[in-house]
Image 1 (tube, rainbow, N blue to C red):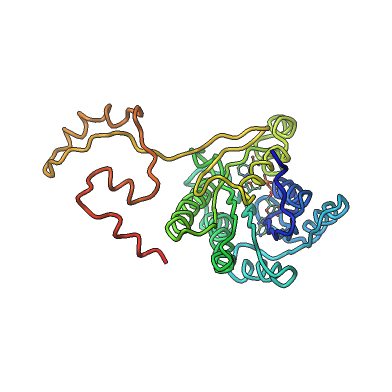
Image 2: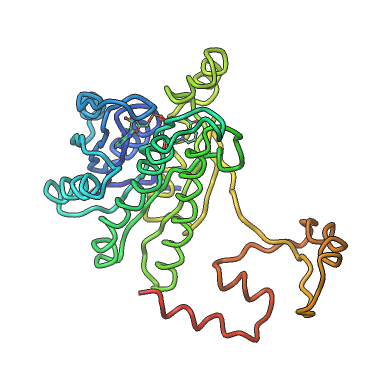
Length: 314
Ligand code: NAI
């Protein structure tokens, strides 16, 4: 197989001053991309601001022979996100690749202890940040009929118990990925949006305590996630709207499916019937992975012309 190269491509990697983002930016640059290294430079809880974080990562990439520029705007406001994209456009005229990596974990408590501010901060960086950045690059990618967006979700989405705003925001990232991919599929555009749930030792995993953090850094280095991001950012990316876990040198598909379930036609059915059918509904044998919301609805009946909803996508 020939090497996957990014010569001439322009990439934005948010939150690329350190950790995973720096590893993504470094790999894309090492393979020829011009990379805008964005990072606000606060701590992992989202406090503070320090431009030198993005600048140091940029220097490292340049010292290794790559092309990179720094940007210190925040992804968490539409003005900041627009400024990041404008910065790349001013320097290089277009954006081909966007990696929405910036993230924080502002809180670690259980629900009763969480504050409004903690909810709003996590949602602002991971969910709103991804939305603002995708929106800011969208028109350009659609016009040029080329784009690759890699969104960074999190395995916390599977259920974590504490720090609820963080998995909630990362779940929004997956839902956004599915919806944007459904739009580009419907429009027949060569713009692909996928997501990953990384696993890597970083300053964020210090939350897990020194012992686990040390093991994470040893067995799950950030660089071991980067090949999956690069594959999804490449023009040969083989999928749209997919999600993968990635870490330690491997990756797996994550999917949302529906079971065969119980699909009767009696509109006046009862809670007792629902309970009686529970085991059948939970049985994952013969499950189906819907391509989109209409596909899922069509599993109930094809009498309704679900396809008719597609023209609403513009
Ligand atoms: P990190 O804390 O080193 O990286 C996050 C980066 O985002 C930091 O450099 C930070 O300054 C930057 N950032 C924060 N708010 C920003 C804003 N408003 N604007 C621009 N930049 C901002 O942590 P790590 O582990 O490298 O995380 C990278 C991404 O991967 C995050 O989205 C995180 O949620 C996600 N993730 C990481 C996992 C892991 O195992 N390390 C697991 C699941 C998800």
